[in-house]
Length: 414
Image (cartoon, rainbow, N blue to C red; front, side):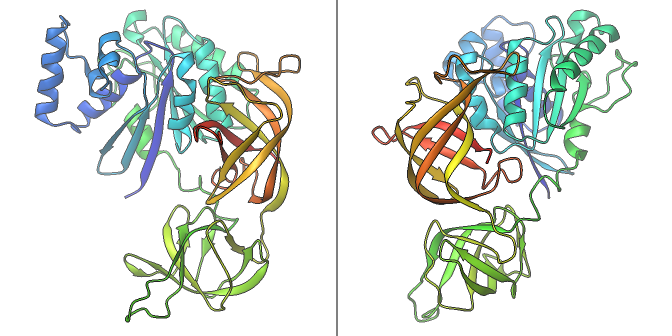
């Protein structure tokens, strides 16, 4: 069954957690005792209806304040698809958590309060979704019940967002008027908005085409581990385990191993289910090759006639996640695919104003939750593709060498 990963984003009190709770409840994806628990918690707080947001707001501080602080992951399935939801916070100071939750998503749900329209956080989250290469965006205009389900309110918000998003690269954007509290157009079609002829949110989630979201052209296999069982049964076995980051590999394919540049052929592709006729992203497999070549963790197996870019000088867009600002000449550790190396920041080119999407060339201080473009030089060559082409080989984690904290997430431009 196909798996769809999606993230919910939006400003504080836009109803993200309520929407996820409504999805889980209306698709009958929660147990009776879970429902009884949140019903009891709602009654203790003096609420007249069952607060479905409590299904995702698990932290005590979240329940007391009625907000999301940490990323909450929830899983559910329908007869058509399996889903992983990342419910992300709305506060500006938790933007880094939104980046974390959205980094692997196929689709982003961006909620807009029908009373307030497009605001700064809407633009910020839409920009981050675009920056992270999320191919599909659903603008859910929530709380339509508070504006009397008026069509003109929905049309105004849709028009405003279309004007803003015209600056982005081409994206698949859908618009749905909903009321998460009452369930209008979430799982079931709303009778109060008969002017809306589109699909419900669940129908969109079940049917949106995501098979082509993965890069099936550029074959990339970062080696994570060398398997040498040293047992009597597999005495001479040597396999290279990892996750396919792009393209399709088959036994007999001629491949090149980077950084050595040696060429060989794939002997077999194996998994827990036995030998495979092919492997494609994002499958985790073990490959064996025909020749004895020195291959270790951090190396990459690619097609001989389709190789990634290789360089020590890399330009990237970075989202900063640490209270300590980026050091313009600092040294950091970076994690790229299965490869770890050190780098130095050579230049901070500009910071992005997320409201206007303009480049700020005056203030180049990149602090917590800021987004900017930087140039780094690494100690050893990276094998990469631009992030827009391949999210797996185009992403970098920046790590503080002293504290071992992840301080930034980078998307390679060139």
